[in-house]
Figure 1 (cartoon, helix red, strand yellow):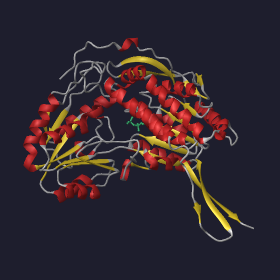
Figure 2: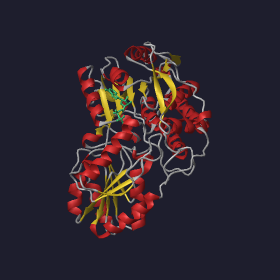
Figure 3: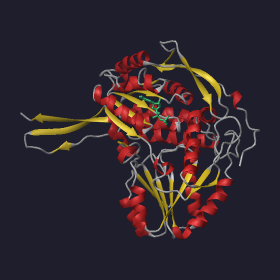
Figure 4: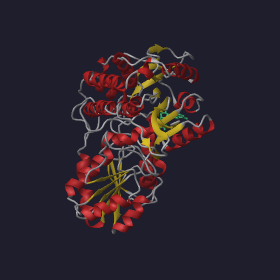
Length: 493
Ligand code: ADP
């Protein structure tokens, strides 16, 4: 279904910040270059943004180094004062949620309601990590009667953070939260498709009172700006969320430069297993949300829906009926459930995958085409009869394409679910507790959801097995990426 076109016009959303944020100041690009930011709902330009390159990264590193000097205001700040700054930032995210959610929707295309939900959970994430600042403690370690041994958890230093476009504000807070809680300084590059809300957040960081140079936000592209961060000799750590292809490049760049610490959150091809005892409508709803949420631009998207043979036909019939009702269109319309894909290249890639599904013999049950004639909207699409070796069952599509695969036995489906180079998320729908726990133990993925899907909480770790990445974000584990452990041994002479 398509949403109507009468909605609150995005044309009255004022764009306040388009420059590079270094040292709490707004800078033009040293190269003089700018790049175009596109509204995915229309394909039209929203504005031009200053394009940071290598020279601007060097400038940001200088500012960050100064901010991290041992007796700098930031280093001397008591942990609880650091927490107060973070809470202030979180409160500004909530204060400006009306404007910020519209800006997020304008730039990213997700429905406003989802932007609001994202910002709330992002503010919670900063608050959650603000709570950790005075609890990041070392240990005293018994060794010998005449020595005193203890550990200190010290910030790593200058952290490069490169984020994607699918959750622009949320990804920013996942990265900033643990880094700042541990006392690091940051150079963050938003995705070139979605720099606008990150730049607004930069203004909030300054308003919150963070000292200059602690957080620097550089809009720019991957090969120039992102690569300059990855290869920089004075950046101590890099955290990256994005594709496997670029994740590998980041790890190589880190190894070939200064062996900076690396954490990676990459793609997925996550299985959702619907057992024969599942309540059918419940399962259909979860599977629908698992794939189509955020226009399926989700690294955890439930892209392989395995359905038990006994309920297979009925599951398809009900899924198709639900999916045909999914309202796709203008994200400023409150009836809309699905906005556009992020840009033309993703849009074309997804349509190519749909073609490949048809060519390889999967059955197109619904969708399969674009919606409207401008912007990057794609109908929510379902394929049944998908086989494990088909391209649509193996590669990450990042678009609204549900692939339904039939299974007969639980041992069989476990093997098939694990037969992928990814391992980010997995789900099981069943009323049988033993079966649920058995799947939870044997599925090879960083998160397993039982009778739910894609439940990500600030308090619990999130990350991937296999080529879905390494390191964890969120929760206490997320802090471990952002401190060094120093052992101090004192001889009691
Ligand atoms: P996607 O396919 O979701 O756009 P990418 O992995 O291409 O994912 O991009 C995620 C982030 O990585 C973006 O901020 C992008 O600019 C950045 N990026 C892309 N190429 C590189 C690179 N060679 N080095 C560093 N960062 C890069």
